[in-house]
Length: 121
Image: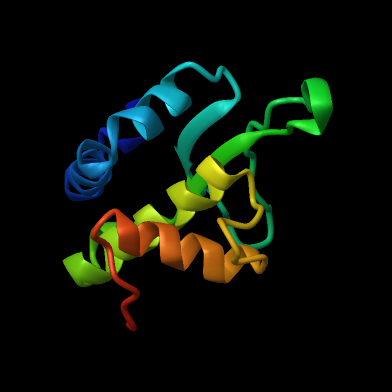
């Protein structure tokens, strides 16, 4: 969680979401070297640097979750939802869930099943 050392509130929010995830989801993340959570380091006019793992066997690519620093300052329920939604994408490898084929709807549904309902800003 080194990138989050200067954003304690965001680090705490990420840890709260991770702690709420089912054990099998936590294990899935911990056992995959391609899984990573990092901060978006976008600088206007310069771009960003984000580490992504190379594709693995069976087309499994990176499972990098990139979070914006502003999640440290927004409403907590909104930030927790966004974090859970992005972790759901990583868990689902940006695919569907059950009968839900749309990746965005699937991530929303999975995040909701973890207790993080969709929020608006």
